[in-house]
Length: 167
Image 1 (cartoon, rainbow, N blue to C red):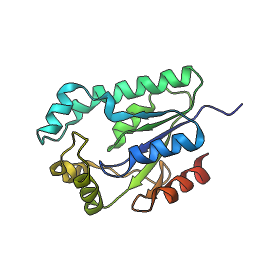
Image 2: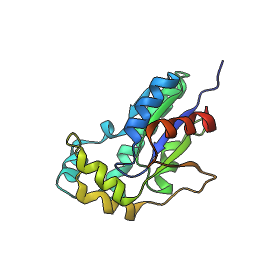
Image 3: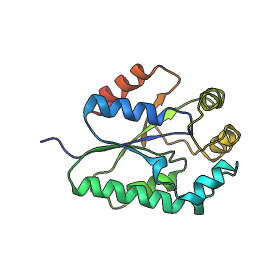
């Protein structure tokens, strides 16, 4: 039996967390949890209005995601989670009380590329105007704390990189 593991796909909005998460889930058979679905209504409204979330806004969201990871762990199911996890403290909250520490995959993308990707989306509450605030808030993880992948690459290359290095 394989050990229970969790992969957290992190990075700014537009880095490809959702598309990579869904495709990785399809390839390896682990469930994919879209972190954005766990935002409360006030956070979504705030972002829709072009207001960047603060740490106090994010804490309950991160705690809900952590509870979700704990539930999967207790059910002995490995999972893939998407979450911006922009700061070290946010990543710490996600890993709290887990028996098996999650593996973070930092999908690194330029601000220009993230902007282009977000301009093409019409199904998300995050406006292009907030991209810069995400880059300002980002505390890049060290290479010891996360697998770094240049997310400007095609989806297949990113997936293969994750499978080779983590699975």
